[in-house]
Image (cartoon, rainbow, N blue to C red; front, side, top):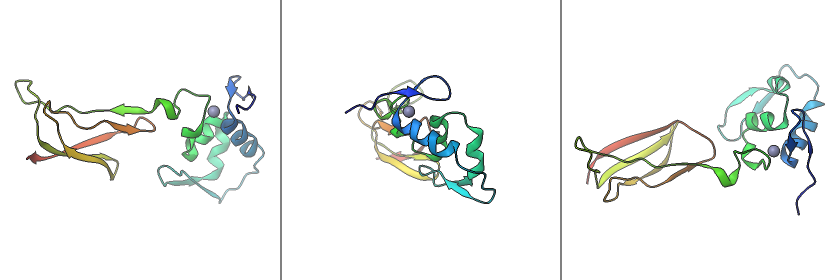
Length: 138
Ligand SMILES: [Zn+2]
Protein backbone atom coordinates (compact mmCIF):
# COMPACT_ATOMS: atom_id res chain seq x y z
CA UNK A 1 0.00 0.00 0.00
CA UNK A 2 1.29 3.45 -0.89
CA UNK A 3 1.67 5.90 1.91
CA UNK A 4 0.00 9.27 1.42
CA UNK A 5 2.53 11.83 0.29
CA UNK A 6 3.28 15.06 2.05
CA UNK A 7 5.44 18.04 1.34
CA UNK A 8 9.05 18.10 2.43
CA UNK A 9 11.10 21.17 3.25
CA UNK A 10 11.83 21.87 -0.40
CA UNK A 11 8.14 21.95 -1.27
CA UNK A 12 8.22 18.75 -3.31
CA UNK A 13 6.25 15.63 -2.54
CA UNK A 14 8.32 13.46 -0.26
CA UNK A 15 8.14 9.73 0.22
CA UNK A 16 8.11 8.08 3.62
CA UNK A 17 11.88 7.52 3.62
CA UNK A 18 12.57 11.22 3.09
CA UNK A 19 9.81 12.36 5.44
CA UNK A 20 10.79 10.14 8.34
CA UNK A 21 14.48 10.93 7.83
CA UNK A 22 13.76 14.63 7.90
CA UNK A 23 11.50 14.45 10.93
CA UNK A 24 14.12 12.52 12.90
CA UNK A 25 17.12 14.63 12.01
CA UNK A 26 15.45 18.02 12.08
CA UNK A 27 14.73 17.65 15.80
CA UNK A 28 18.10 16.11 16.60
CA UNK A 29 20.10 18.28 19.00
CA UNK A 30 23.64 19.35 18.13
CA UNK A 31 26.09 16.58 19.01
CA UNK A 32 29.58 17.91 18.30
CA UNK A 33 31.41 14.64 18.92
CA UNK A 34 28.92 12.21 17.38
CA UNK A 35 29.74 10.40 14.18
CA UNK A 36 27.33 9.16 11.54
CA UNK A 37 27.96 6.37 9.07
CA UNK A 38 27.31 6.34 5.35
CA UNK A 39 26.15 2.74 5.06
CA UNK A 40 26.93 2.56 1.38
CA UNK A 41 30.52 3.79 1.40
CA UNK A 42 31.35 2.79 4.98
CA UNK A 43 32.67 6.28 5.67
CA UNK A 44 32.10 8.01 8.98
CA UNK A 45 31.44 11.72 9.15
CA UNK A 46 30.43 14.25 11.77
CA UNK A 47 26.75 13.83 12.61
CA UNK A 48 26.27 17.59 12.93
CA UNK A 49 26.97 18.10 9.22
CA UNK A 50 23.51 16.57 8.62
CA UNK A 51 22.00 19.79 9.96
CA UNK A 52 23.25 21.58 6.86
CA UNK A 53 20.79 19.67 4.67
CA UNK A 54 17.32 21.04 4.09
CA UNK A 55 15.57 17.90 2.86
CA UNK A 56 15.19 14.38 4.12
CA UNK A 57 16.43 13.12 0.80
CA UNK A 58 19.75 14.95 1.12
CA UNK A 59 20.17 13.48 4.58
CA UNK A 60 19.29 9.98 3.34
CA UNK A 61 21.85 10.44 0.59
CA UNK A 62 24.53 11.45 3.08
CA UNK A 63 23.72 8.36 5.14
CA UNK A 64 23.86 6.12 2.08
CA UNK A 65 20.29 4.84 1.90
CA UNK A 66 18.76 7.24 -0.60
CA UNK A 67 18.26 4.21 -2.88
CA UNK A 68 15.27 3.39 -0.67
CA UNK A 69 13.72 6.72 -1.57
CA UNK A 70 10.61 6.63 -3.71
CA UNK A 71 10.12 10.28 -4.57
CA UNK A 72 13.30 11.24 -6.37
CA UNK A 73 14.48 10.19 -9.80
CA UNK A 74 17.40 8.22 -8.51
CA UNK A 75 15.49 5.24 -7.17
CA UNK A 76 15.85 1.50 -7.37
CA UNK A 77 14.17 1.28 -10.77
CA UNK A 78 16.49 3.81 -12.33
CA UNK A 79 19.89 2.61 -11.36
CA UNK A 80 22.89 3.58 -13.32
CA UNK A 81 23.68 1.03 -15.92
CA UNK A 82 27.09 1.01 -17.55
CA UNK A 83 28.73 -1.13 -20.14
CA UNK A 84 32.22 -0.79 -21.52
CA UNK A 85 33.24 -1.64 -25.04
CA UNK A 86 36.84 -2.36 -25.87
CA UNK A 87 38.05 -1.52 -29.37
CA UNK A 88 41.33 -1.76 -31.18
CA UNK A 89 42.84 1.07 -33.26
CA UNK A 90 40.69 0.29 -36.27
CA UNK A 91 37.52 0.39 -34.21
CA UNK A 92 37.04 -3.37 -34.12
CA UNK A 93 35.71 -4.79 -30.86
CA UNK A 94 38.30 -6.65 -28.81
CA UNK A 95 36.84 -10.03 -27.94
CA UNK A 96 38.12 -12.31 -25.21
CA UNK A 97 39.83 -9.67 -23.10
CA UNK A 98 39.96 -10.30 -19.38
CA UNK A 99 38.77 -7.32 -17.38
CA UNK A 100 37.84 -6.22 -13.93
CA UNK A 101 35.69 -3.26 -12.99
CA UNK A 102 36.31 -1.39 -9.78
CA UNK A 103 34.30 1.18 -7.89
CA UNK A 104 36.85 2.76 -5.61
CA UNK A 105 38.87 -0.06 -4.08
CA UNK A 106 36.31 -2.83 -4.48
CA UNK A 107 35.98 -5.05 -7.51
CA UNK A 108 32.33 -5.08 -8.56
CA UNK A 109 32.51 -7.02 -11.82
CA UNK A 110 34.87 -9.03 -13.92
CA UNK A 111 35.03 -11.46 -16.79
CA UNK A 112 35.93 -11.70 -20.44
CA UNK A 113 34.60 -9.41 -23.18
CA UNK A 114 32.13 -10.90 -25.64
CA UNK A 115 32.55 -11.27 -29.41
CA UNK A 116 31.95 -7.54 -29.90
CA UNK A 117 34.36 -6.49 -27.16
CA UNK A 118 31.66 -5.66 -24.64
CA UNK A 119 31.80 -6.17 -20.90
CA UNK A 120 28.80 -7.26 -18.93
CA UNK A 121 26.35 -4.57 -17.83
CA UNK A 122 27.29 -3.06 -14.51
CA UNK A 123 24.56 -1.74 -12.28
CA UNK A 124 25.26 0.78 -9.58
CA UNK A 125 22.87 2.62 -7.33
CA UNK A 126 24.36 5.99 -8.12
CA UNK A 127 26.74 7.45 -10.61
CA UNK A 128 30.04 6.14 -9.39
CA UNK A 129 33.42 6.51 -10.90
CA UNK A 130 34.15 3.10 -12.37
CA UNK A 131 37.61 1.96 -13.31
CA UNK A 132 38.17 -0.69 -15.95
CA UNK A 133 41.25 -2.86 -15.59
CA UNK A 134 42.48 -4.84 -18.55
CA UNK A 135 44.26 -8.10 -17.92
CA UNK A 136 45.20 -9.21 -21.40
CA UNK A 137 43.52 -11.26 -24.08
CA UNK A 138 42.57 -14.88 -23.41
ZN1 LIG B 1 12.09 10.24 -1.06
